[in-house]
Amino acid sequence: MRTNSIHLRQIAVAIFFFSPFSAAAQPAEGWISTGPPQVARKWHSVTTLQNGWVLAAGGVDISSVNWLNSAELYKPETGQWHSTGPMVAAARGFHTATLLESGQVLVAGGWNGNALGEMDSAEIFDPGQETWISVGSLVSARTDHSATRLPDGRVLIVGGHDGLSSLSSAEVFDPTTQSFSLGPPLTAARSFHTATRLRDGRVLVVGGSDGKGKTISSAEVFDPRSWSWSGTGGLSASRFFHTASLLPDGRVLVTGGDPFHGFGNGMALSEVYDPTAGRWNPTGHLNNARLRHKAVTLSDGRVLILSGFESSGSSLAVEIFDPARGQWGLSQPLANTNGFDTVAMLPDGRVVVAFGQTANLAAAYMDFVQLMYPQLALGGGFEAVLLLSNQAPEPWVGRAELNSGMWPGDRPWSLNGQDRAGEDGFQIVLEPGRTAKYTLTSSQGPFSGWLEIRSCQPLAHLSTSFFYNFYSGGVLVDSTGVAPARGLHRQRFPVERSDSVNTGIAMQRSGEVLMTLYDSEGQEVESLVRKEQGARFFDEIFQGVPPDFIGSVEVSSPNRVFLTVLRQEVISTSPLEFQLTSVPATEWR
Image (cartoon, rainbow, N blue to C red; front, side, top):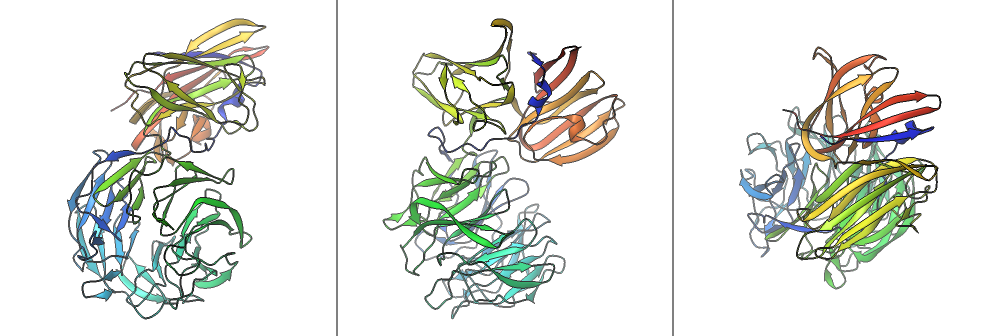
């Protein structure tokens, strides 16, 4: 087992406190093909289940003639779709599909162009049995409505269209009784709107159509505590066929849409809603005005915009909004689209897009091929050296991302002697058989983060070496190799804490993980779920680590967890000097 040892002087402990830096889209990001759906469909729903699978249900075939009651499941571990039990109430499209607290999926309302028109039926999918059961009918038949799960587990169904006009009515589904009941009505009838659950449990409803040929600029908020609606600040421009995405800081991003109730007149203007102030603020423009598009918030907080329609037809363009910078950028376009694509976020941060008879798969964003070094120190005498060698017969293209809570905006750094302050990484292009050396340095005191290498190409033919050099007075004191983190599902590590020793982990892009602390006798001390990335000592994660402790920690997740085990030991108190050791993770069963 390889380890690395780093001597950190003076402010060494500070390097354990960092958070991920949200990088802008880069050319190395992109898409790869995955297994095609069993049935070509559009106007259907997709829902990510608690086990990570994706449920596609209903819709209409590509000819727009045959409405479907079929359903299928996408399994990320195999990259394939397979048929599951069909819906039992009726074939439908334009319905809502809501993940319940139980892990089941509620499908409600919609439209059947064969005979039924707007629908009031509802049914529930049980992923354990892969079967559907009918539940109570909606109070009002509706399509093009919204459905939002409330904090207490009930589902708020709002607005929509009954075939004659847009609706102002709202109703609530109770999973315990499997029945619908009327809720307080909206202040304005609307369909084709968006509904977003805010961090405090309220629901923001934005824009839409009044059903009489006019788009809506107003917004309103439902408060489940008072069980009432109230108006809030309106959009600067009316729109429907838009998207609304919850940002990490609690704001809501609204993009695109149609302002004139005429197909093809997409918008580029984006706005952000501040729930504290109840106001909207512009936040730049899409590079491609569009409507009927899709938006998904990635694991790092950025928002991916894709598909839909531009004035020239269906849109292949893919854009990313970075809320930390308030900026839009372009990413690699889709290979093909019918404009009605459906998008689902996988638990490991990847995004699956299905359209027609094909599907595309991307990672977040889009690191479906990645190599991670969770521990990186620069400045104060430290430099990092990365050696890459391409053994493939074709060029290898990728990108090295630098991540830290204070990087790069507040910390200058250099690549091979060239100042790169303000940048977040660098592009890598290696011709066949070529080897390149990248030396990273900083003119300031020691600070830390991690290095991640991303690419759309496989890593099988890429040889890598990564190590630290530590200089004191211009003299090389230490040079230590660092092994990359491995993506594992279940891991267990020893824990030690004393006056001179502490242990922890550097964890990266792992989603939710279950962490369990055990004492030296193997008895459980504490268990908790964490989503946080970065480096932490175990006594910062758990409350039950006393000043003198020996035990172990088990980390488990349905997704691959990338981490390195850290150990800090005081080797001198005058002057204060630490030794930091990192050990690559090993799987435990």
